[in-house]
Length: 265
Image 1 (cartoon, rainbow, N blue to C red):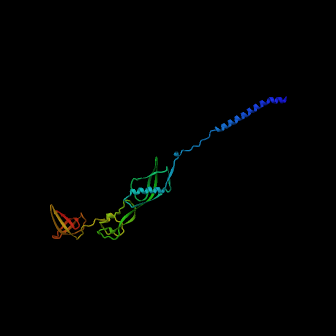
Image 2: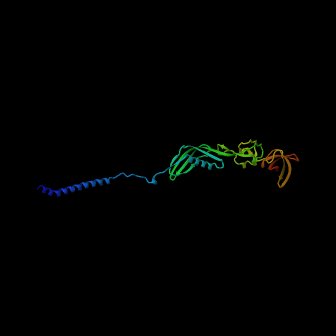
Image 3: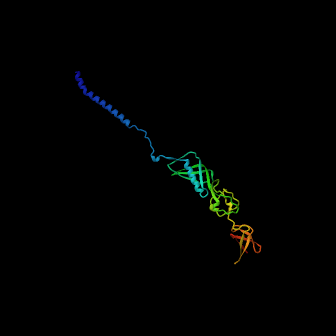
């Protein structure tokens, strides 16, 4: 009887167990599905194009920018320019990989010494102005006599040389071109190695005091020539006094060439 009861219930137990296993499996699958569908926080990575790159402007670059600017501004006035940047003392970070530099001119021209420059740094749409403080040194090739020159002595090429010297202003008074000096005469005694200025030289004298000169007298279409002695020295174009050798009469004459003066009535 008992055996018969177990046989009768066995199919029900098997079916019940299978359903239990099936329900357990369904719960496991639901849990797994829930885990897979759980939202996660996305990690945002900016594209390479959106990442802003930077670069450094070194002190050496700023030095070169300022020096090139001064060389252009002072060309034909000085021989060399030397720049030492004091501020900024370290590199400056700017946006972008490369940049264009331009020194902004000041309201008035300044010379050597301690200077402040405004340097514009442009990189596409990005612009920045840097304040640069620098010591500036300017050198010239000054013309000097290589021997003692007496007053009124003509100056030849072998009487001159050039020496490099520092100047404290761009518009200096010194002569730097030997061709401006050759053929002139000393306006005063000039020691050797003294930088020449325009006031130290003058055109050579065409006649000197006591020279025998030809006097040309013109009146209308009439021209008379005679000889005389100069009472003073003079350059071409200057007016001097001459004495007629025949009459001794003193005349006012214009120097028109070496040993030639002209009197007009």
